[in-house]
Image (cartoon, rainbow, N blue to C red; front, top):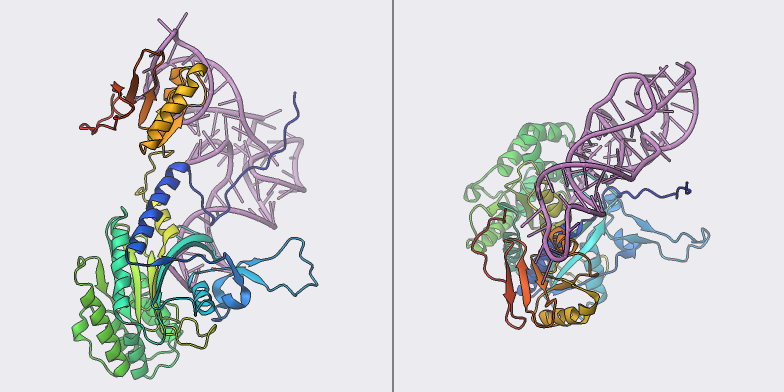
Length: 442
RNA sequence: GCGGCUGUAGCUCAGUGGUAGAGCACUCGGUUGUGGUCCGAGCUGUCGCGGGUUCAAACCCCGUCAGCCGCCCCA
């Protein structure tokens, strides 16, 4: 009896996801698509470090963000010279720092996209991770940012999401000035509890929101009625502005909706109950829901306008508007609902059979030729039984198997693994034939 | 951070006091240069961890850790 090796049983860490190859292939296709749409609108890529100084991350006073801090295992506990570092919890704060720091070298309006992982020390569950990918676009300008960019955000996102196979979705748009203007008119000063709870309207219903606003925020029934009436109003033109701020919000929202009139009705909706819990948004706000997965109520893509992005870092006024796809959330939820189905386990189009050790050079040569022609080609690694080599192609779902000449006077042959057909092939001209039948060979 | 539920093979789970099982997956085989199906054989477990009760614990009790779900918050 041999001694049993001690092994550490591998396990995944909750809230940190990783995928099998067949899923990762799709994830990369999605990311490629997102990148290409972003770039088609002229957004430029920025990547910032995973860590920022804690002072930067906390500059906005977002202490409830559950930031992961970074320390060295060998750190000297008495040495506090090192700046304390933390993993970034979003990409907006790093963008603010970046924009302020490189202010003189950037061209404004600065349009950037950023796809990186972010970290939040929260309790994970479906659609909420501790490490997740966000795909952000933001436009930053100096002093004044044209409203037309507020309409560009949903336009870009519509194109991104429409190109991913995620079913129907709806981008809801509102403008915080409308609700905040009403609160001002009603004489309500402490707005955060109100906006946070109005935000839950669709999720928990009007009665529950009424109870919370009455009991916790101490509002009067009259005030609550006015707020709910506004939030539930589905007809923008019937809203009466009670002050300048409200009117401004209505005008802005109408402009944005007008700019988006080319998009399908179900995809874009003005919804005055959307206010976003975050209090740094000052105008337009966005949320996106998956209509085909109604049981998942959280937003998969949100954002908004902020009047002053980098005020904590530079003495200039930098207004911006941005939106962020919760990529990991979206991907996980769709996968959970069976809408992300992995097929290929590797990118190869063709598996090269290795008939014998003597033929290895010819096989390699053939593979090189095919790669030059643009195919992705994997060579089988050992001259094993054909049964094994074919079974390998089958398991990896490689669609074509290439048989090089087994003897000098023979021809190349290619087998279509889907149909089972095998035909002679010309190395310089072969291409995957159009399959007219979609059935698998029995 | 708060609450509920759950931890048994790589996966999905059965087993509720008498020293561990199924299906799937995986490996090999069913002769010469051809995969999937079928048939046969095989491999895989500190029964999450620690303690207690008992002649005896995967099973009962306590603790602990982890996971899932809900809340909070948010992508």
